[in-house]
Length: 292
Image 1 (spheres, helix red, strand yellow):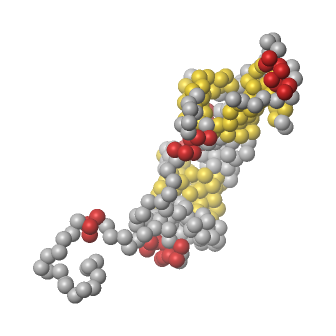
Image 2 (image 1 turned 120 degrees about the horizontal axis):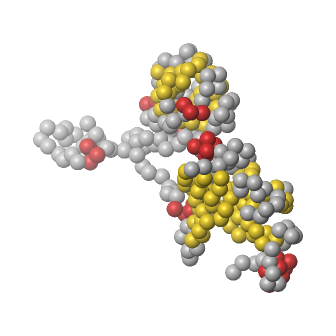
């Protein structure tokens, strides 16, 4: 049962309500939008909720227990608010959405109905449909570690401990050509051997992708390959910072980064071939290790 404020509860109990929906959308980069299905702009809590090109609430599925509750909102793509390009670039992935029920005659009478994160977004015919996932969704995310040979830390994070911002492991670059959907040529990386930035990432510092981080899948000469389509939103002259990559191998961790002590994998676990072996007459029976 929801605990409404006295004023909001009294308004609902009056039998003649003036209620609307307001949605506050906060992207992971901090950019905030406010929308309402009312026909005039509303302001509260430091945000303004505009009716222009706003959202419309769709179906809400309520479930008991710890199951993830889902809802959806529909809206119009518009250059001044939510654009198809921004959605395609992932700017709205995992954004927080607050759904408020508000008395538009007195916005002090309101209640936060849901707080969700955006899941899947579908775009078609100038309209988008965004899935809203409740906080229980976090319970479906796998936890714990898998014991295998490869490192499961991200290069430069707290578990890895490597200072990725140091000289030799990052460089500033500028786009000189867009080769195809996922490959670009850049200046500024000529002093690095081929493959140095493979499995690394870039942070865009100008252009349409400014503020976005993309994974690098390949590096050859002055060409960088990405793990998704970037051509439609990258132009010659755009700038980016390129970070060295790691293939998660223990040998790479030691030789390339000198960070073997912090390796977060298990390189000495016997592999499948060893586990399937059985003794034979040619094996040395010395009482020592059987890893020969």
